[in-house]
Length: 265
Image (cartoon, rainbow, N blue to C red; front, side, top):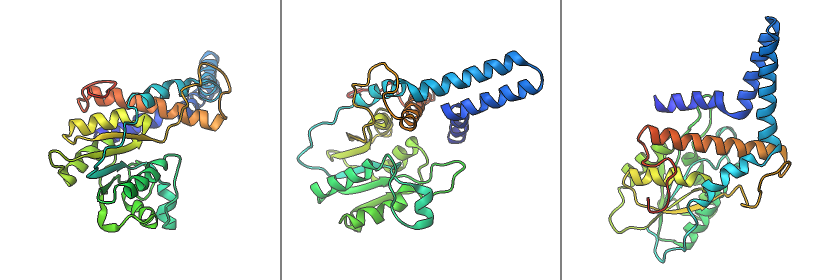
């Protein structure tokens, strides 16, 4: 139920969709002669889009998430690498059978690099199809094609194909891997996603070393206008709002212990 409610809530609350719904509500109000409601809906829609597209708000919201878990020194020995899904174009790969990467593709590239650096380490790819409306191929189904092309042997791969969100990533991966005491596992995901992912793996009893990748901010954006192109600004704002909402929702539901998890916490 949590999965479906979270997907439906996010469909309506993400900035672009929210602006569209406000415009639609304003148009309906205009047809009914409610001019004040029409003006209110139109102004709110404009403000949402203007702030998301023309300002650095998204980067300022995202940067604290990316800075929360700095990348540590590499350990001398690594028993396994866990990479969370979210790096592939699932709908395209389902049809074309390739391994097209999206803006989160650094997760998979870094995993291949780590796999070459630690040739004895197991590689766990965790991620099924987490879309509610769109049809696509889960990342754990796509990853063997890319990792195989990058010389990662198939017998090193452990594929977790059922998870639809980060909570299920942690729980299902823990059940599949059953890590032993004293083992060293790296957790690879986007830097902005690491606080929630690390907290969920800790809660599931799977000790990992966070290995953040896929940074979206430089940390130098500051307050300002037109600091990035409109499409990227909208994407960064959307990701930041989604991640902060996800942290609060997971905390309120008891899935994590802190609203803003930190190293050692």
